[in-house]
Length: 119
Image (cartoon, rainbow, N blue to C red; front, side, top):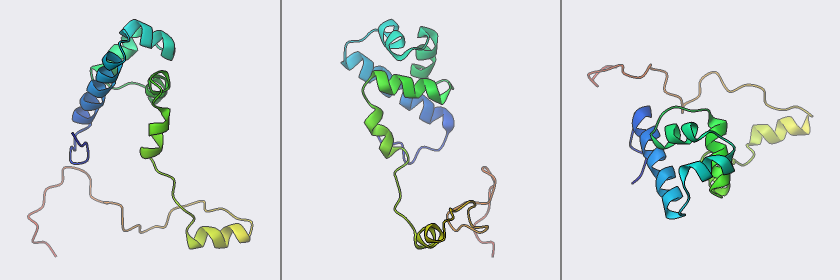
């Protein structure tokens, strides 16, 4: 199942928790053994698998214990250098800020409903 079209945090956490549990079971590892290998408490692993909020470092530790760290590249892919970055690097500078009007950012708070015919 693709997570792309699911928009609630609760759904995404629950689905990821199920996937962690499925991977652990497919490998034949108990929660206690995986928690020990990851260096987290069994209760934290239970929370992850139940889809509850936990620290991201705990998730990374579980990924490492399950040998899934290479999959983190898909989470936030590396981007190539943009022309402005190349120009700045030649001047010995580095980009410090994002542009003030980025076309990819939604500026409305989530949950704002509109008719769709506004100008």
